[in-house]
Length: 628
Image (cartoon, rainbow, N blue to C red; front, side, top):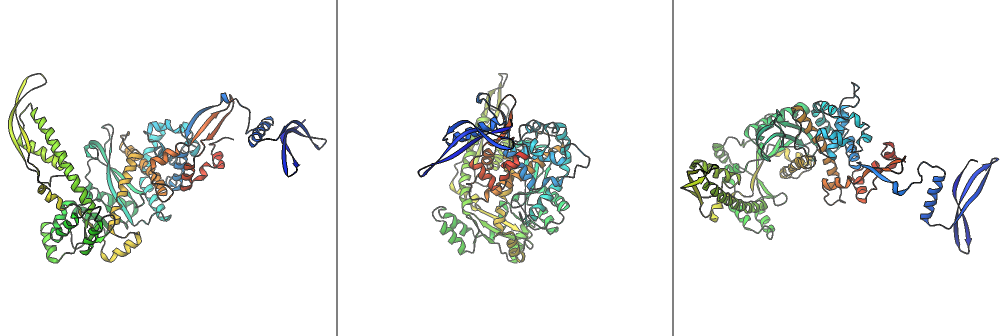
């Protein structure tokens, strides 16, 4: 007889109270009429008991979503990265990056866009070598998210697609720039430019060179990056190792113009890229810039700097007398910018310009504007750190003297002086008046074979360093010069269009590009490069930059929300990675997929990132991330 079991209930009123009584019943139809047979009376039930009996009745009716199981036989088969991968895929789609790649015209089983998406998200979630990424792919939910099966994502396909991905580099940069402008994510009025370096494993890479980089002397390549003020990358490139900073501007300008056409934005870059040739190149192409002079170039303006005023400001206690410092400087027409920074535009008479141009013809005083900047906090820190570096130098002298006593061959005075000067430069105290003497003496030492070797060597004796020795160096502490070719007529309109109050606020924002390299280095983990073909090295950098784009987009959203207390990317991803897709074995035949229960922090992150739909049952079921 066809029918089904139900958890039936009846209500009875006793005085002012209503009681609910439950029973398990068998419902069926006979001759077209409904009937009910009570199987068991259960009486009054608690909420947990009601839920228990509902599930039991569903099991009796063979409902697909419940069944009896033995808790001892339940086990978790595996857990895969889910939420971090889903967030990565969301922001790839947010930037519509797949649209940059041509449609799958040659009917490949996996498109270039999908390979680029997978590589970028894997680098975003768990950085690894390209070879290892094929193994890690199956440890994530990316096969379900991208609809690319694990068997189709293999080493041969990855390396075959790398060069094709790199061929779209300029299109990707242009797309990011235009997408950001069209969607109000940036005004596109400012570009920040800087360089870093990346270490190469092995000696086969044609771009790699042995030389000095940020990590000392290594086999490396030079990384070029151009970003918007929001941190969005719009141009990037890998140059040969040992490429000097000052030699990159010309290459950058030519290539960016090729991709974007005439550069309308103002380019902001660090003083390391400043050279007369570079500035003239930019001016020749009517490109506006904001940068700074090297510290030693301030000496050209020595006649117009009021050192007496600067020393007076330095004499105040920075913590207790900041108001007096401000009053002292404002009185002499210094403008307060932000965070202990004061500035005034340098005004020169014709005679002063003529005198300066006698010593240097590189300042182009007629076309450029120079601003004298003073930072009392920087002055205090430089003075303190200089004394620390002097002590480090004295410790180095002590160790060097020990090394000289062990000489097996005669030492030349000139080479010792060269080593001392090199260390002074390294410690950045060559402007401190440090006097030393070299006294010759003879030593006898045993070599590895046990033979006695006689040699002439030297002992370095440093004279006591008086406070006056620091005077020349201390004179310029806290002082630097900003320069720009934006004339006074265009200044107000430019600052209004970019929402900044001064050129200094813009120049300080160049720290954003330093942050970009930190994220690429520490979070995206660009190093080391495990590939060596030039195109593969370039493609690796492109994948890292795209991964960084997802990171900075997330970071900007988090920063713009007051509910988070400076949550870092590492903290955010540690939280997202806790939410996995779990495959659970219920019995010999039944395996289900579920996601780890969301924490309140995870829910909050998804709300801020505007992607809460990623954990909705409808989305999870549609993408086969959970089973019913």
